Image 1 (tube, helix red, strand yellow):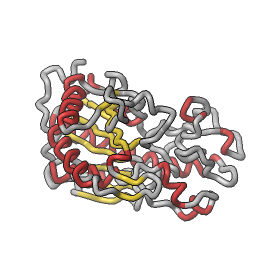
Image 2 (cartoon, helix red, strand yellow):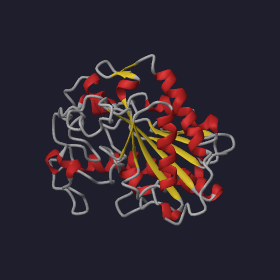
Image 3 (cartoon, rainbow, N blue to C red):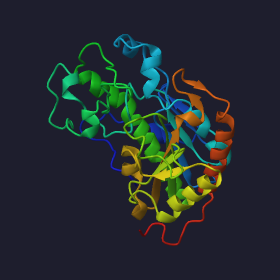
Image 4 (cartoon, rainbow, N blue to C red):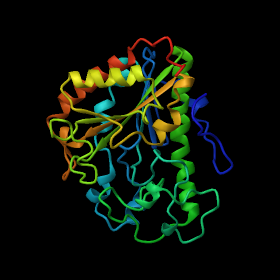
Length: 317
């Protein structure tokens, strides 16, 4: 078994694994989509936690932001770029709800006290860099820094949201990883994201040696979430397609990569960040024609990653 996410005292457990994991594909209550091949042939699980765009009406009504501004936090179209995984023989999980509503790439209770009208329980994490930036489990701002909520929330609203959306995603993801590891002896998790092309905060740190912005950032939590042979092979294959690749800077891996990537337990997690300028108009949130060749290249990349022969010491790092 991998990861530390499980049924705790504050969690309402959802029996998603035993009930549905035998189905080739399914949707959990309109919140999570899982597509599985009829027969899994690759030791690979592909996750897209930030590409959801089903905005609850009550959430939209609680904000003064336009729909376009609310969507600025999305990893828009990343699910479309990576959804070929089942045709290759690997399961694909994606959140249908948006990151601005709930971020599953965080610890379960990273909450900003300034957002709430009541005092938060002691078990809640209230101080870290993500919370200070307004990007906790329930975000205070969208990615451009604009405040999301007109009024303060109550803790029960946050807890209900976490129980109804956060836990089912992680329970389902964990089941897919466990099934893959049990079948093949190891699992490679590819956690898929996108990054803004013009983020001045990070602009210099992910420029390639040629001076242009990096196309793709691969994160392995500085060597702790993935065997070095796998991450090195991933860099080589993507570089071979002509992409400029950065490793761990500025995105080393979020909660999903850190939590599930445990090489000593034969689970290897890589976070992949795509420069949005490669495939979309960031202001209008519209696809560019470039999305098709990018999708084809990343389909080949997934196939390559899933067909890597496991090194003899894959679980021994």
